[in-house]
Length: 536
Ligand SMILES: Cc1cc2nc3c(=O)[nH]c(=O)nc-3n(C[C@H](O)[C@H](O)[C@H](O)COP(=O)(O)OP(=O)(O)OC[C@H]3O[C@@H](n4cnc5c(N)ncnc54)[C@H](O)[C@@H]3O)c2cc1C
Image (tube, rainbow, N blue to C red):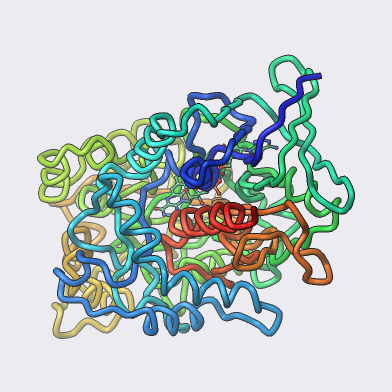
């Protein structure tokens, strides 16, 4: 058996584990970080992420003429999150985050040389529930890859580097309790199966959420979403399976709000999967028509992204078959099609300014070609009848009703044909509204018809619900100390990042204002490290 001893054990080498390690090394502690994955994947989901971070009161906001305050952000957060009476800790975390994110997340990252795109994105404005009153989604120039790599570099070159032990391929499966205190963990080495024991004065669980385990996602499916869909794609970490959630629960820790998840509505199959049903999450084109499994437009409120991601999922799960279609053409795709994450945003990821501007101005040909050639959920055709035939062939039945689909397209196109003065369609009203914000105008067509000889060919995308983030998790207090069923802190045990629902077992509540995940990992990991450093 392999044995080790340090001051602090961190389980999980994602963003939260890395940030906690940096801070603990700075506080002079000896740290051991254990991760189940291979070293190449050090950085976890943050490395694959888009790198959008929720910040209040940034320079980028001020330059864009936005006056934002923690009070306004909190008002938005509490409304969007729909907290309930049991959400004492999540609410306190939300309050702490909006007040401290500028200094503790944004300025902290800037000190490592991390910069942001000049105009913040305006995500989650709210549909029937108020959301972000102003844009707050700050995208790291270089995406989450840059974010993770910079912090890993900081860790590896830390002045106290000698006090850090990194162990990859180490899967933790249980915690050791002695004298009422958590003193370490047990697990096994992935490659050999050899067991190991690691001991420390304090242990931080930073193993991510549960959403990489689709069976578990199904078991915790929220009642608002009826039954779980037949197909749920996996857009999370392959090891985000909740093993450490269970280990914490076994020793008496409290798990909360596991049915609160941040899943997305527009998942498509990855053509180079690294896990079963590996999905990519599309940013759904706003000028596309969003149709149900039969080819009927979903309504009465048409689905348009940018307002309430959770509601999009709810609407699709309300349908008899819980997947959908988006119908568009190449011109719309060139301007609006995007995929969340670093992988399919190479110009931002590799910080290529000219390529980024070219894609914005002239359309992202590379991405559209990549998706239409490789992804099995994309269909291209020159006419509506051909498109419907191919949609039905893909699905393997005759579910799409050609007449219904054609009617939906013609009605919508006719509205556009009549001219903006006479538009009387909620999707067109929303497009007009979205285009008022520069960050959206550059990515949204100005009232584009679907059937348009100058915009062909037609494209249909079959979209599934894709699992992504766990909003709930291990409950903690503001020092990230894990709480037991009586609400008492468990000596020696801490949780941070997605494992802790980004703080308090679910600091977002029911919905997230976006960018609060990466931000929440940094914020909670720093708080955990500070609390441990204070303890001695
Ligand atoms: C494509 C994509 C785009 C995203 N974009 C954004 C964005 O723009 N903004 C935003 O805020 N959020 C975004 N997110 C979400 C964000 O990246 C994650 O919520 C965040 O990175 C989670 O970090 P973490 O450290 O808590 O957990 P993870 O990154 O999940 O890391 C957990 C680590 O623990 C390890 N581990 C798990 N189980 C064990 C075990 N039993 N033993 C040992 N080790 C274990 C794993 O191997 C992993 O390395 C995105 C996510 C994805 C996938």
